[in-house]
Length: 378
Picture 1: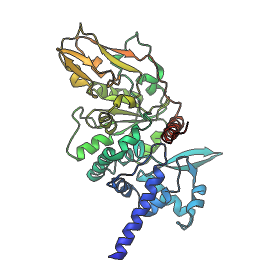
Picture 2: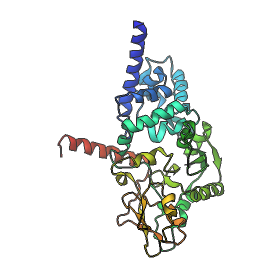
Picture 3: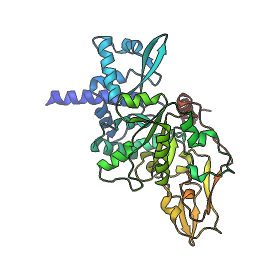
Picture 4: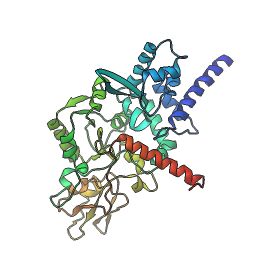
């Protein structure tokens, strides 16, 4: 029994080291009192894989560099390659493929929990894992995501909420994102799959394939069998249904996003947790908000039912929008029978970072700034 306890302690120690390592990434992996984060790691990594993951970085590395760090733990570089690919298949790490000369080279890097490891469980997801993820959100990960107030997602308006008078930037137009995509794939929403598993299915839509992956990331989806490739016209048809069902369109918060999420207020783990924050509007990246013309509003409450952020209330039978909760998705506008709601542009327009590298370095710099403030350092 003592030997079993020792083995268990050593195993937990490995996962705790991995947790501390992942907590140094731009999107960290904080410790909780319950230790639920260790269960999440154990689901994805074996102890040996965890030891190897500790030696990876946020910056992608070639296998030769990783082998020098872990050669005491594996028999050969060939064995390491097999292990790394297994970790990739299970959604524990990312592989970035590049061409050097005439040869394809694999670069390996740690993945965040979200956006990352959690979404990569779409084929492996279990009820227990999803429940642990929800628990972790409550106990620590939600605060981690909100710590810098720099979101990995941004909200763009549905097409029917935009009229010819709007000066909408290219990066805020859905059609522009689709037209510029070299390839598109569609995969099931891991959040809705999780909600189905726990017996709380989506109240907003019966669609399940609502996660779009674009450009080079399509290879990742197809290689691991997470989804299927579609044409631009097929994507437009799916987005038509997405907008009819009132889902929030949220691409990655960069100029050239690799994914577009279609979120609801009952299932989406980001949206539902934003609403739990004391000041959720600080975490929402959007350039628009909705405004009601009280003279035109007939009090039908269609917009109240449509709003995923619960930002609309009725005041003396007139719709009233809380601008601190409105994310400018435009869903209330597209179904208002009296056209009493209009989309307005914020005074300060936010241009997204150029790419993911720029986004995550921006998050890291903000974290460093916050640490200096905590320590009283200017």
